[in-house]
Length: 283
Ligand SMILES: Nc1ncnc2c1ncn2[C@@H]1O[C@H](COP(=O)(O)OP(=O)(O)OP(=O)(O)O)[C@@H](O)[C@H]1O
Ligand SMILES: [Mg+2]
Image 1 (tube, rainbow, N blue to C red):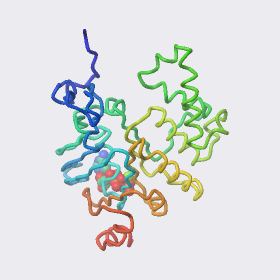
Image 2: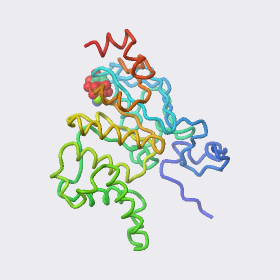
Image 3: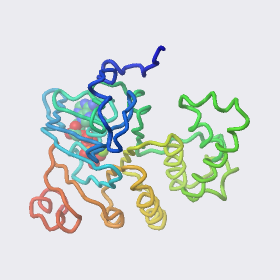
Image 4: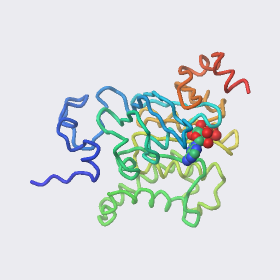
């Protein structure tokens, strides 16, 4: 029997039986490319360095995110927050260091589409929805950009897809706007729609870069509720400057400064840290 493996699997070591035949947490045998959360760690970054023309944007960065965790990343402009997301998603190759998704998937050896396909979804700051399509169609299109596109041929599965879209619409508070053109939504609603589009791909890890920038206070609060509700099923890494939002999320906070971790802990602890006050909060 021929086994069809993901493209790029060889490069990432996914085809090496050593990397996937070991027992997962459940004692099951993992399939190639399957996320191994046997140590409860979904993202592992070790000694990552990224230089741009000799300038160290990321400097020996070490960071671990647990499965199901909701992590906030804060830090001054230029600290390397977005660059870190570029490394995780394969947009930027680190000069050195390790980056693993679960125990076995080496992110430094995979391309951007391969990483997205493995289950890392990213939201950039600016909403990028299809303005001339309805909210419903946007979610439908997002679902069909992956390999399951053939499923749409099977009428029996369409109900299942409709259910998924309807669940997502409720989650992102756009159930009442399903038939509205996306271009007519408020800025905050567009952000939610884009988050919904990411969710249609069922990512295991979501990277969200300044998701509440430009939102009203009410929209910001609703977004915090949404992210809290997503944690557990998904893991989230949220970069934000809005401290009220970070507080509402309630998770562990990592402070980045000059490309390294300056402090880590609950918000109250890092807020009381004199080094954090000096470089960031006391500005
Ligand atoms: N492609 C690039 N070429 C050169 N320098 C870059 C590049 N990308 C980022 N940098 C530099 O690397 C540093 C880190 O940038 P990054 O965008 O990661 O910061 P950030 O923490 O996301 O900041 P902000 O809070 O303003 O979004 C900055 O000094 C930035 O100018
Ligand atoms: Mg940034």
